Structures are given as C-alpha cells and as structure tokens.
Length: 425
Image (cartoon, rainbow, N blue to C red; front, top):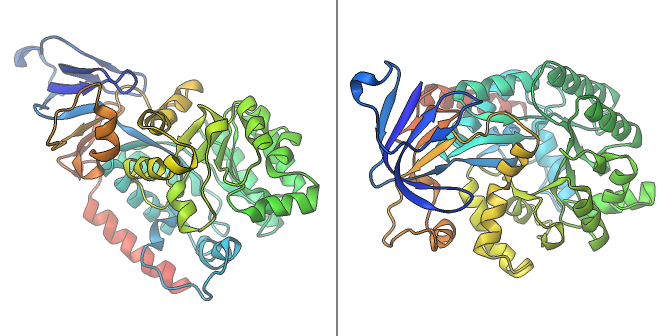
C-alpha cells in the first residue's frame, strides 16, 4: 500500500530543509518515502492506496522515546503511599516497588495499551521500555509487545532484573529476557540499578547480552545512594563497576539518568560509545538533582522515565534546565531529541524507518523556515498539534484519534485494572 501526502510542507528531520512537496509513503518495516513531483491519477492507483491532503500542515519524521516505564501507567491518581517518602530510596520502596509487586499480566496489558495510545497521540512511534513486575515476570515482555503491536507502535523492550526480591524473581527475569530475545524479538537485558544488582547477576546479565548481541538497559547514578552503595560494597563508583564487568563493551547499552557521575566516569562512557538517556522531569520530580551532559558529547538521547508519553514536552524541559547546567542551545536539544533515531539506525533496530511520519497542524503566528525552525521547536510546537501519525507506513492516528484500537474500550479496561491495582495496594 502507498499513502500519498499531498501538498505537504515537509521538514527533513536531519538537514532541517523545508520543501513544499508531495510524499509517497510505503507500508512496511523495510520501506520508506519518496518525494514525487506529481501524484498518480485516481485510475492508476491501487485499490488500497490513499491520499491525505496536507495543505497548511507541517510534515516530518515522528518521534521516539529513549527510556520509558509503561508499568507506571496505572499510577495516575493512585492512593497515597503508606508512608510519605523522605528520600529517593524511600520513593522506590513506598511507591514504585509497592506498585510493581502488585501488577499481574492483565494490568500489564492495560498499562501497555493505554501507554501506547498516549505515545501515538503524542507523535511517538518508537519506544524503548524498561519494565518491572516482580510477581508477574513470565510472558510480561510478550504481553507488552503484543499490546504495542495492536496500537501500531514500534518497540525495544527489556525486563528490569534485580536482586531486590530474591533469587526466584532474579532467575525468572533472566529466563524471561533469554526467552524473549531468543524468539527473535529486539530488546535489551534490563537491570534495575547497581545498588540492587549483585556481582553474580551483573556477570550473568553481561553474558546474556553478549549471547544475544544486545546491550544492557540500566539506571545509573540516578541518586547519590547508588554511588554510595557501589563504593561501600565494591570500592568502585558505578560506571567503574560496570566497566570492570564488561558492560561498557556492549555498544547497544543504554544507561539512564547518569546524574551523579564524576568527570572520569563521564569520560569512560564517552570513550565506550554506550548511550545515555536524560530524563530531567523525573529527576526533578524525585528531587535527585539535575546534571550537565557536555562531556558525554553526542550519545545522549531523551526519555520520559514513565512520567508521561510526550517527547516534545521532555525536550522543552531538558532545554530549560540545560541552559543553566551546561549552556545548551536549540540545536543541542534538538539533536538529543532526535538521537533515538540515530541510536536505532546505528544498530539496525526495526520499526523506526523513514516511513514513520507525523502531520502537525501547527498554528504558528509567524513563518516557519529552515533557519528559524529550532525556535519553533522549542517554543511553539507541542503535542496538541499532532493531527495524524504514521508508523511503518500505516496510519495509526488520524484527526487526533487512534485508528487501530477502540480508545474508549482500552481506557475503560485500564480504569478497571487501575481499581484492581489500587485495591491490592
């Protein structure tokens, strides 16, 4: 099937060149787009071909999220924790670990479906997720993958393996990861963080990643407690510990947060080529601090850490903080926003091709040009202007509504699962 986008104002996401043109979008993971000078006549089109008039609309590549937690979806509006957390480790203990232990596969499915809808309607078509459900590990990654596939979102998944719940969940997490990757699914070997991962588990995780030609996806120095634990137990800082274990040799690895690093640790990451994900709103919410990422150079992308599904919002927040932490400019934050695509391309991950497109009904009071687009990106464009979204050449959002699933049905299901979860809390 070919989807023709007629009369588009097309922005090349890499060069920022703007053209008034038509686009021909081919369906399928291996296909892309062309820019024909004319459209075929109706009588020469195939029956399944379509034309969308994009006159007055800004058309560009859709967006990606470098670090997400779909398991937090049902937390919105949840009851207060049994104790008000006083620090980051208590936030984990009384909020997130309180939730993840009570998830079952049905709740995970609802979380993934609802989150996929929110991603799609925000223009996000490629999601790197980091999942946790210690009492419902087996088949959890497949449930998430199937839910994202139903909505039409491409994905790169992992399960957050940890020692914090004992040997049983740890071994289940390793088995779930092994089985998921062995079945041909793309993903990572997920770990929670250094302070909940012992040496035996770290060794097994690195070996498993090498077995499947993958990488680790792990929280790194999100809070000072992570560094304090590593120094006390191993006499090393977190990145030094991961280097000793061979984790920095895994170029597909994603290290999330990286707030409390020394310059030496940053240089180790820079020289290794692994990728870092900045999640500034989550860091502010958890009061763990903010950081500058200048020494990490180009291998920094943006995520949400499960706070929401809106990557345009994440980019704006990272820009505002980054002005004071590292003097970042429009071009720097846009590059981080788009680095998730470069990451996917570097390792041939499926689902983030050129035929992932967003059509924006951008109601700007001023002209948009190649020279001033970055100012519009930071101060103007937002998720409410996402009108139509195409993933792998298939329309998954049209006129602000998801086309692949019944939104009301999914959100009713999610509401029921939210009540079930809260009842168990």
